[in-house]
Length: 234
Image 1 (spheres, one colour):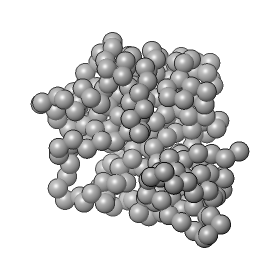
Image 2 (cartoon, helix red, strand yellow):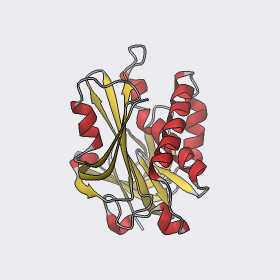
Image 3 (cartoon, rainbow, N blue to C red):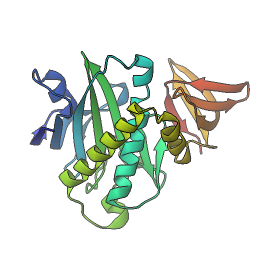
């Protein structure tokens, strides 16, 4: 695994997307991102003290795109378990790509396909007091425990966890991983609104299904969603 560490970078994911000689497991870390990016193209400056990194996964021609559609879920569970190895807290997985702690966003994941590579970008609120993305609903490890964490070491722990979970997935252990995900399903039994292509659907979040879809109980019966922006209704 090659590690590229920068004091400041526009975006770790963009750096890898543009890198001509990228190899599987290349890891890019930035202390600060000036043009970090989340889902739906949201831009923000990522603060110092956060864990900001992206890595490369080479496409396996033996895996279908349907199988790769579960990559954000596998990455999410690997991230959650990696964080538990750093400090034991009650982390939850918010479908499809966030980790929550104490009902606030701790971390986000963005997976992008570039040629025959997948770029997995992750941002974690570690030591920072200004949070990634929607700061009003953010939380960091330090803000909860009062302790300061070594950022690069934390990222390496997350990477080891991802390699372990990805190997499990390749060995056919998706059902077992999915069971773990549903045990940490933040949306389970919550009132939510799913927004997709301008249409909003309200209901109660239920389990994450074998194909990676989220099951939502609505007034019109059970509906399944593969993608969508989730809003929690209090």
